[in-house]
Image (cartoon, one colour):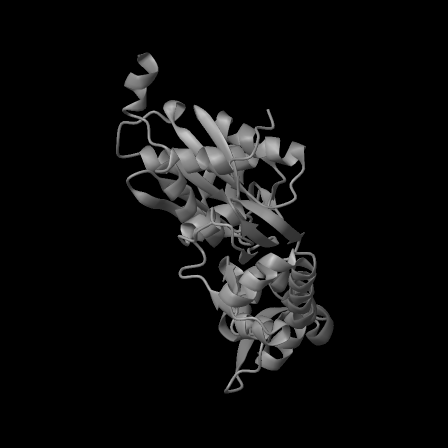
Length: 345
């Protein structure tokens, strides 16, 4: 009876704890948090100064007493205490204007493919640490398919490629489970780092992550653009140590990203080669669906389609498909029980 009383004030939530962004879905409210997975901490007091968008503004600009940290690497919690503080701050934002009890909430957490039992347990632990009553672990690809309202329980194949910030998950789904999959430690963050390395080795120019990300977003592409473009990049000259600016073209950026894109295509091909022939026919009919923030790279759908001779489309609002899927699972407890992973506790 007491549990039933407190549950009236609880807000069940779904969490997409991503390498680059964290999204939180609150039942009956939709996506209430969509912010970078970044935390700024005072090294003296160990207090959180800022999280999310505010912390991102501080990246690379702080004095020694402040550390701006990214607690997730390649879809894995690499700094548990910092990740816990970040998540608690996000939860506080959700409940700031209302009376609610997180300690009575049900939490759906999404994970990348191929996590070890220890890594999965860390995801579960962080949900219990913020006070969850029940924790359900779901594979991110399954949640993405649900978020796109795809018929995952049908005996037919759905192929999804989730290109995130730290990982690329490739999977064929049928009858509520993943039949065949590949997981790569490649994502949007790696694209940024390759641009930084290119500027360093070809221009003797050291640029920051934000500059690299702006270059990727503005002129990055997987195929030749109809109209050539370029962008000014500013950084520190590695020889003189002084500020300098250079122009980088879309052709140069495309050559930098080409290796990673080809690796993703090769692994999609391997996944298809190891998929039962009955399901391959379904994939050829329905095509491949791209989701995740890095699927927005200009022309990536076309280069995959041209290479594999299979239709490819990008999901509507690919950044939020996983979070939307957790919300739909909160409203469908029977489906949640069917597709949840066993507890690692």
